[in-house]
Amino acid sequence: MALDLTTASVQLRAQRDLRLDTLIRLRWLAVAGQTAALLGVHFVLGFRLPLLAGLLVIALSAALNVALRIAYPVSQRLSGVAAGALLAYDVLQLAALLYLTGGLENPFSILFLAPVMISATALSPGITLLLGALVAVCASVLALSRFPLPWPSVGSLELPLLYVAGIWCALMLALAFIGVYAWRVSEEGREIAQALAATELVLAREQHLSALDGLAAAAAHELGTPLATIALVAKELERALVPGPHDDDMALLREQVSRCRDILKKLTSLDEQGAPFETMPVGHLLDDIVEPHRNFGVALDIRGEGPRPEPRCLRNPSVLYGLGNIVENAVDFAASRVEVSARWDADKVEIEVLDDGPGFAPEILTRLGEPYVSSRSADREATSEGGGLGLGFFIAKTLLERSGARLTLGNRAGGGSGARVRIVWPRLRFEAQPRQAAE
Figure 1 (cartoon, rainbow, N blue to C red):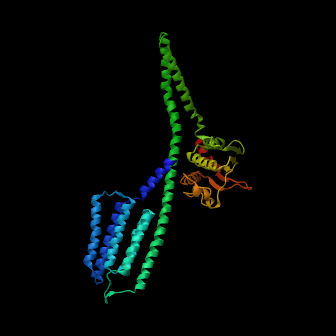
Figure 2: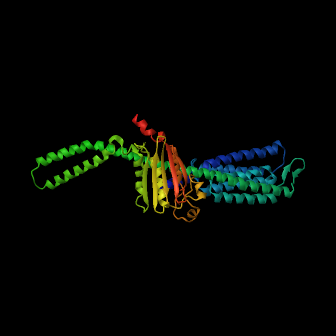
């Protein structure tokens, strides 16, 4: 499980690395827009401004794009620091253009938000904060020092300092609010993506383990014939050989052939009538999920109640993993005892897991089922060392709900301490796959 989560984390970090091609394309769009705006204002609207200096600043961005395209492949991914450096250049380039065309009085000063938004959605919070600080410094300088805003009627326009200060405050507020909002939304998306990636990895591992059962049975059938031939030849050789120094070798050969037959018999018995590994009654399902947790100093009590025969379900790695995770969580927090009970009738199949631990804290109970909620109590969450990432219960809940179950979480009634997890399937859904297989 730890390896799976590490793999998922690596995958998410790779997803957060920006592609160089994305930044180059965005910069080409900025170069085209800046050039059109500069030429349009100068030649179409007739505003006098330092055209050559502005075009030189834009040409530097175009030259940087060409150099990056030549030096790196299209698929190149940038580290957070490298991507942040390129976005910082974009901030400085925009500041230079605004310096030549009126500073914060220029309506295009709102474009300061663009590099910070890109960083907030794709890079780490630290890099985004540094870019925001750079924007604040550039905006402060432009509020106090810049070329005058071109204006056709009087040659230039000087806005009151109080108005410029208002623009600066609005820009800073927009930078903070939109930046934090964009980061939070993208971070939630990344957390969900990482949790789902971990779910897929865990499920794939369980499916591989389940597939080994069928492979073992198939191998046993295939090896049966050559092993019988070996046994027959060994028997004939033993009859043909004169008693002597080869007796011990023949006895060893007979012993090993018999051992191989016993092993193959066990393997083929797994596939007889499909009982143990294709379908299982609810009692065997409880035994399977409880057995790995019996040697941890916690008493495990299993009970089943309902009319006979017991409902049967297909051996499903998703259900086994989900239920096993819930039992493991109960064993981790129990003081001395965990009860796992199953009840069924004509309409539903219910499995309930109770422990005698501290139970779910109210502030955690409302968030259980979300990724990265890893503790039952706020105190344990704050003090635990070496805890998990909080994905186990999220994965278990997702897999069980995918199988048609409904989960109810709470604490034990009647004043006793401990947590209570109830999983309920409609009986038709619980037994659907075995019935289809029988048909």
